[in-house]
Length: 275
Image 1 (cartoon, rainbow, N blue to C red):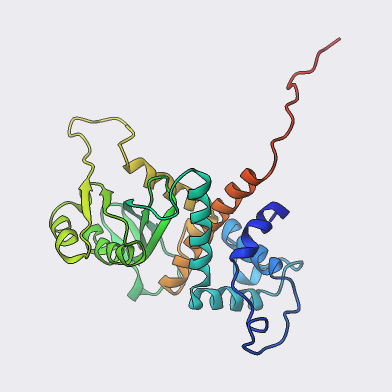
Image 2 (spheres, rainbow, N blue to C red):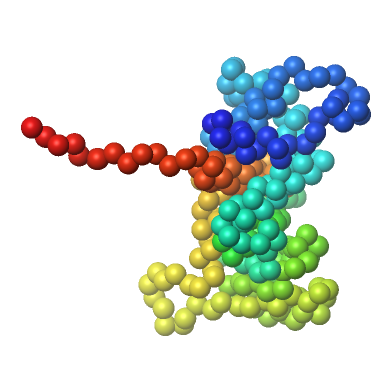
C-alpha cells in the first residue's frame, strides 16, 4: 500500500480491543502490516503458508483476517469506502437502485463436496457468487452458494440481504435468468417492495452488444477477478470466499480514492524536442 492508500483505509479499521478497554495487550506490529499481508494474499493469490518473510507470520495474519470476518469489520470497512466513493462521484451515500448477477467459479480440492456443485450451463464444478451492485458498479452485497444453485433461487436470499442492508433500494435490474416468479416474490415478500426489472437480450442478436444496466454488474465481476485469489475458490467455508470478494473490492476502491486525493502531476511533453 502507498501512503495515500493507507490514509484512506486506516480510519475504517476497527478499534483494537486494548484501546477500547476490552483487555489484551498492545499489538507488536502496526496494523498496516496486517492489511498489507491480507491485500497481498488476495491480490496475488498465494497460499497462507507462502506469506513473504517481511510480512507478519501467516498464522497471525489468518487470525486477524478471520477475526475481522467474524466481527463484521471487513464488511463495515468496505461499506465505509463505498460511501466515500459514491460521494466522490457526486452521488448520495446510500443507493436507491441495484443490479444483480451471478458468476460461477471452479473450486479447488479444499472445497468439500457438500458446499460445491455443477453448473451445467457454464460447465463449472465449484461455487457461484451472487452479487448486487449499485448503478456505478460498487458492490452492495455478496452471497456464495454451490454452483448448482439456480440464479432465481440464489437471488432470494441475496435480495433479502439487500433489502435488510439498504432499505432505500426500490429498483433492481437483472438478466433473463431471473425472470418468472422471482419478480412477484420481490414485490410481495419484501417490505418495502422491490421492483425487479428484467433487461432482456434481443432474440435476433448474434454478436456482442453492451446491454443497458447489465454491463455495470459484469464490469464489477471483472474487477473482482483481477484479484487472483477470487479467480478460483480456495476457501473451505463459503463465508471466507465472501470475505475475499469484499477485500478485492476494498483494494479497488482504496486505490480509486487514493488517486483522487493526490494532486495531479505536472504535464510533461512525451516526445522532447530533438536536435
